[in-house]
Structure formats: structure tokens, C-alpha cells
Image (tube, rainbow over all chains, first blue to last red; front, top):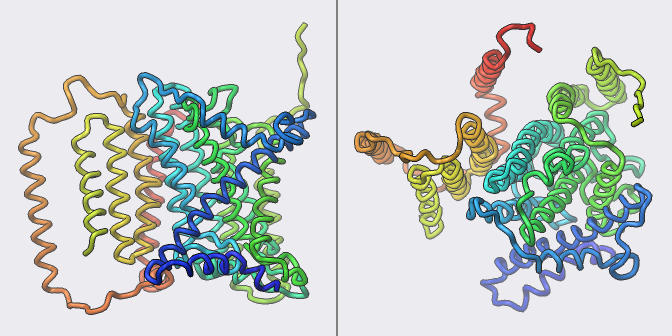
Length: 391
Length: 166
């Protein structure tokens, strides 16, 4: 019964496909999976936007959307209809073709990443040897879309936003890649399926997730920071800092094209949460051995939505960084720490089983963190904040 | 060689041609990206996953961005009044045709000297990794050293001349 529930989507697909002629069945199966992905994640996008608006409202001591439906629950529907019916304004001097292609390209590329994410037991669309490489390859193409949007609008704010976004995304992509390399080093495979399988083991009922090792914990933190910067989320949302740049690279977009950028941002967030889940949080494996009967896809989506909640929480908590702080943070703190983490991962592998490696690796990382933070603070004259009031 | 090969080849050629023929420099850079993507697809069709994805990651993710940045930072991306075509385009065309002819001749000649393999070799990413970390580790390290030297050189060039300026 529980085994069937675990594989319910696979069985459903096989049942639907059986009605078709034999030659068409493999292709139809793939098309069915693609349609499911393209429907499910925008659905989650709607839910996370609602969660974000309600949650931020709570954090900022206001109500959030509460007009459409009970507790404002149908707000995403209203938003969708609004953006579909709004006029699509293209600036007179804008570069028509590139201006049109930018949001389309973004959405396509963002959805391609889902092809390799294992969303449950046997629930990977494409089993690929180099799945992680594929994910990063398509992820790197989003920068181009951001640039296209900013440049084609012929607007100073858009161009500035695009330049900021691309600089930020390139800087943090290095960190994102290097913190994932640690996982690849331990697993010995670029295949996301194998990475999940390696974490789907239990000792004393506790899982072997990589986040529960010293290098995995450090890697997860750097990965999360880089993921936040990569998706242009607060506190790294300088490219769309509304107090400085109106809306950054999509200032000149309206109507459904704007909605496409919005969709791209959130679907990208969901996708990178899925990757982080797969790499460090055990993918679809259950957090405790006794919970193994719960369907695997439930755990995957639960972990993604938890990550989204953390994203929202951080957005509600931290102020925006300044551009120089952002770059210094990436190149002078996070990147050296990630490189050190790679060394520590190699050490962890060499030391082999035993308690020694836990002590040694944790000690190295903690001491390095302490001294690097001290070195970063050195020469920064921090004083108590002085308040000046208007007189 | 199949239907998809011709589609991808047409895409790549179209990207390359428009990169040369379009007037706006940023448009050229973007069509060059299309050509890069076409090449990556060709690699993927030959079952060379690693090379294909590395092509996308490096060329579309990094080189295209670099090209675009270089265009924006060096001079205006606006098209000059007198066009972007050089007055000696005929000589350029002749040289390009000659280079293409030599390359094409070399490729066609080398095909007959290669052993005729009946089955396509299957190379997994793991094997490439093993080869890079085992047999070819010295070239890899030398390339890494070279790139680091280039990086440091670029930083030194970009640094302020006098140290007082902060």
C-alpha cells in the first residue's frame, strides 16, 4: 500500500500511457512528465508568492493580501488574470526582438534545470551521468537573459541593473559550483540520482545527509548564500533595488512579460532549493528511518517548501547589502572559505572512518571561520551607531 | 547524420553568419551565442556529454558574457553611421575562404587515415575525470598555473599606478 503510494505518479503515468499505441509510448511518457513539471512548479510558485506576501506581512506587522477569497488565498489567481489582461508596453527605442526574447529565454532555461532533479524514488525525468554539470550549464545561461533584458530596454536603470546582476551572478556562481564540488568529491559521481542514493542510508535511525558532516554543513551554508545571490533574492537583491533602480533590469517590462520574469525568479528559486536539497539535505530520503513509509516525493517537496520559507524569512530579516560589500563578501570571504572547504573534504576522505576526522575537520573549519571573520573585520572602524534627528 | 544533424548545422551556420552580417555589435554577440549553442548541441548529439555541457557552461555562461561586457565597456554599442563593414572586405573574404579550404581539405584527408570504428566508443564522465586526474594531471596543472598567472597579470595591469591612490 505504502509502496504504491510512493510510486503513485509513476503508476499513473504508466496507466495513462498504456492507452496509446506501443510505438508512441516512450515519447508520450516523456511529454507527460514535462507537462507535469510545467504545471506543478508554477502552482508552487503561486503558493510561495502567497506565502511570501502573507509571511512578510506578518513580519512587518501588517496583514498582507486579505481581499480575494478567504484570507486572501486567491490573490495569486487575481494577480495572474491582472498580468494577462494588462497592456504590454514596449518602449519606442527598445530593441524589439531582444526585448521579447529575454523573458522567454529565462523561463525556458529555468525550467530545463528540472529535467535532472530527482523528485522522488524513480522520479527523475532524464537519468544523466553528468546531471550536475547539465544543471550548472543551463543555470549559467540565465545571466545572458538578464543582460538581454537590461540592454534591450534602452534605459539607464535597466542597463545598470543588468550589469549589477551579471557581475553578482558570475561572482557567486563560482562559489555555487565549488561548494557543490565537495559533494561530488565524496560521492564520486556527477549523477544526482547517485548523490541521493549515497545519502539514503541510516545509522541508528539517523540519515547520512551531507549536511550532518562538518564539510557538508560548511558547504551547505556557502551554497545557500550563493543560491540566494544567484536568484537575486534579498539581501542580495541589488539588481532590482527599487530605491535606486526602480526595478532593475525589468523596469521596462509590463503585462505578461513582467509576470514571466516574476515566474522565472520564483521557479529558479524552487529549482535551486531542489538542487540544494538533493546535494546536502538527502533529496527525497526521509529524515528518520522510522519515517521511511512516507512517500519519497512528499519529502522532496516538503524540503523545497521549507527552503522557500527560509528564503522568505531571510528576506524579512536582513537589510540589503551595498555593491562593494557584496563583491568583497563573495571574493574575500565566501570564496576562500569554499576553497578551504574543498581541502577539508579531501582530508575527510583521506582520514577514513572513525571519530578523528570529525574532530579534525570541524576544528579546521571553525578556526578558519573565526580567523577569517576577524581578518575581515580588521580595519573596519565599527562604532556604536549615532542617530541624528531632524531639527 | 540525420534530420536533427541538419537542423543543428543550419542553426549553427545561421548563428555564425548573422554574427558576421548584422550591424549592431551586441546583436552580433548574441548570434555568436546561438552558434556556440549549436556547437554544444552537435557535441551532445555525438554523445559527448561532458564536452557539450562544458561548451555551454564556458562559452554561453562565461565567454558570451565577457564579449558583451567588452563591447559595452569599450565603446558605445550604437552602430556607427558609416556601417561596420571594412573597406577591404573582398581581401578578407578571400583569406577566410582560403583558410576554410585548407581546414576542410585537412579534415577530409584525415578521415581516411583514421581506423574505421564499427561501434561508437562510450566514454563516461567518470572516465574523463579519471584521465584528467591520473594520466593527464601534469598538463591540467600547467594549464591551471597559466590561468592563474594570466589572472594575476590582469589584476596588476588594472591596478592603480601609484600606491597612494585608494
